[in-house]
Image 1 (cartoon, rainbow, N blue to C red):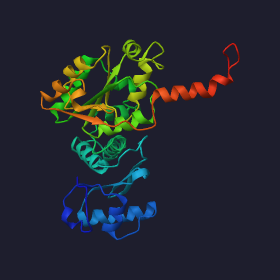
Image 2 (image 1 turned 45 degrees about the vertical axis):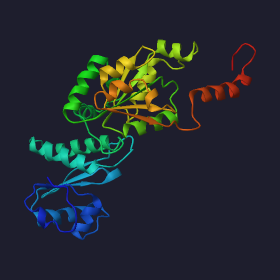
Image 3 (image 1 turned 120 degrees about the vertical axis):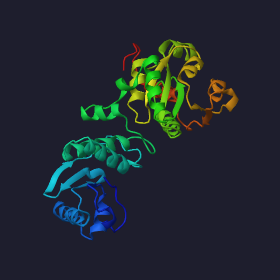
Image 4 (image 1 turned 180 degrees about the vertical axis):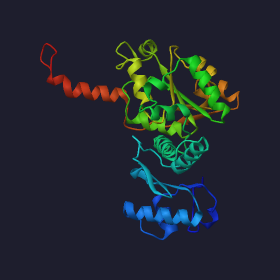
Length: 313
């Protein structure tokens, strides 16, 4: 399987399958691709030139279309629910298409897997890894979201052991994440860009009350975890009940420990534990203008005057 480049496809003669995008098909064939019929002609020309059996055309938001020597074999609509970064989506599609063909799957099923994998990849930031669990979830019509991402510590450590065996770096951050807002999301996206997997240590409800006061959390732990798990930039969520995440950090052994705010690196809890294993600490600035406290104060200010004396709206 070849993900081709350039005008001259003769150099790919002997490949079983090609995975060009629309622009590459037009460039190499010299034919318009402005209709399904014209795209079919262009794909057929490429197969004749290279003697390939299959051409899987990646079409971005248009999905993927598979052609064989007999003509159109299948079309897969785009599957991405959130698009964060298209980097590496074509590579993901080519890799999965080739792997599926090597495993003797029918070409149409191989194209479906390639399309599902690309849809997962573009929902992540940067050059992303698509895991078997994510692919299986997509095949079953579900997302590896909140429920799949919330793990007990023992299960998380086993999962991270497998991921590290494949060379992936683990980023860790922690917090209460009560009433998640844009500032939280942008911070987590920045943290995720630093490595391959983002693990969030989430304060349970009791520890949030100790840290923030009796009126908190505003949103219960399970719901906070589900909200975090719904973000494509978050890979795993694990609860902790201590006032600091030190014990959790020592167990997870992240490659990169991330903290938000105006902390100095020496003030970050877990710094010594991470650096003693060759990891590093990153301090990211908070996004200005967003905070849970400000949101709560705004709600109270705007809606308190609307209540009647009995406290009803």
